[in-house]
Image (cartoon, rainbow, N blue to C red; front, side, top):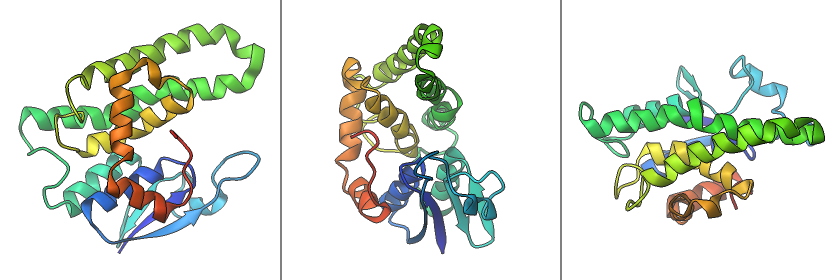
Length: 208
């Protein structure tokens, strides 16, 4: 049985969504953030030394990192769903989006999250961070022009992986400046599998 080690208000929500889209049975082991620090509890270190979520256990296999989890679950349990055929140009674009989400796109958004906590001390960094956020969000917005999803008219794991970028951008009030990305995120949130994952995973305010 697949077990998703699920931290509230975190990236692990998109793993629940992926499994709902695939129609694969899974169990949730839930963890709660510390109310003051917002950090994950130490119990997660028993699953993986980093103590981070998401982590998935599938029998004797443990997988961490969202992109790796999405890739693993689709390859092992997807039966051809949610990814283009291997070897073609669409598959290469799919892989790029999987890696881009956390490798590049999330960095300026995470920097903004932390620098905001510095108050006036972080002010000198704001213009550079804002410029990088715009750079990445403009890229996403342009890629979605004339498309329902990142690779065309069908949802893939790339959309699920990139959804957290859109949700954090919305939480910061950025999305109205990027109408294609905003419509895309609304489209993702309207999917029945997304709603089912929220029902199972518990409250998820991010991006709403």
